[in-house]
Image (cartoon, rainbow, N blue to C red):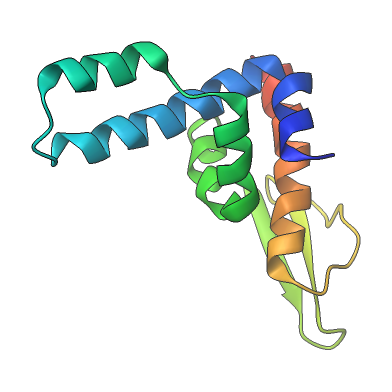
Length: 121
C-alpha cells in the first residue's frame, strides 16, 4: 500500500501522523525570524496528504516516535546469517517477510502500524 493510500485508508491514524509533521514544521519555524502572521497562516493551512506521504516515503523511521507515543512499538531485527531484515510489534514474534533493505522493512512495518494505531483510536 502506498503512503497516500495509508493516509486515506486509516484516517484516524493519519490525523495523528499529520499532527506530528505539522508540529515539527511549526517548531522549525520558531527558530526562524518569520513574521507572526506567516506562522499563523501556516498553522491554519495545516499539511496535506501529498506532503505527508512524501515525508513517509523518504523517512519512514521518523514515524517510529509517533507510534511509540501511542504504544505501538515496532522492532526491526536483522538476520545476519540470511542477510535480511524483519519487523515485529510489541516484542512479539517476527511477523514479516524477509527484506533485503532496512528501509523496506521499515515501510512495511509502518503500514501495519497505521492499521494497529487506527484500531486503537
